[in-house]
Length: 476
Ligand code: AMP
Image (cartoon, rainbow, N blue to C red):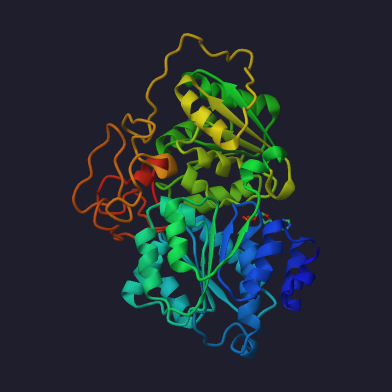
């Protein structure tokens, strides 16, 4: 099948051809005609499946070929926002908007991306100028709505991308506030990798007789990714990683740690070994994150160390090596993490350094992916058979319990307890204080999604939410 048979305009087919993609992926084959039809869509697809083009292309087609779009003679003339795409993270927002620009280059449509962590004024200026397609993280969008600097009254198409992740990050209230301001008659597209009851409830309220599409989950297509477990003692992880990188001559390695502190510490240790490394997480400035990411993409940086949410949306074709330095607290995150390699059919390798503390996590992951991962003990790093498990530290600076944070899908505390950002605190961490992110609705002070202040707390010094325990910060 080719893109031209899907009913897309010549301008779009040409732009796709220039990217080098010759045939649509399964999600694109199904989503493009469904969206062109004008109806609502519920799509189960993870990152790595080609889902972005799956909604971007038909959205561009509809807006550029209808009565309003076909009258546009340039991408500079005044216009109203007609499509809104919400994403959980800054990085994903930026990448989606880049796709909009790449695929829309031969149309007269234009786009903008808004997220927190950067100045609001240039965004205000851009919005004033007039744009067709807005990509945004929920928190910063609400800031603009509060300030009256964005007009959503002309929205015709709404996309919720990675909706499950947005809910995990506590954005449900923000999303609902945005929805309340949109015109009721519109096309709604919801993309999610997983379908919890919460997602189903959101979809039920949002979508009208949606077409439903589900493409193979990453955890059923991982055969292109070689996965391996290296058992190791907890204090030997760093020397083992250095050994793996050096002895295998790995040149582009994405490493996941559980905490921001862990990421920073590992970078320091690798630097001492002469291995170039940088970290991306919510305490890093947006410019530091962008710099690290682009150097890594350009192969100038050997190792990028990331926490889960910070790594969300990193889109690098054929990333050869992913290392789970720590296993994730939420088993689904394992699938997201290793989805960074072997993308779009390329082969890749994902290795996990697993110590005695993480055996239960490993079991949960293997249950989810329905396979037992091969164990490969590296000579010189044989784990001590008498070692006892210790509680896992979920965040920098305090002992926690695996599920104590109530984080994400496997967590104990309901994610929507008390609204948006509720949920318990990890064992041993400070209790929530009034005015924080807990009950009664997620305050957006400082900007939520993508707009989280770099201190990691969204509510003026309040301890973190459940979602933050999982990966150390929201809106990253
Ligand atoms: P996504 O799931 O949207 O994050 O896309 C995953 C990766 O697949 C991105 O690097 C895209 O550039 C790439 N991609 C998207 N569509 C295709 C296609 N039809 N053929 C090959 N690669 C694609």
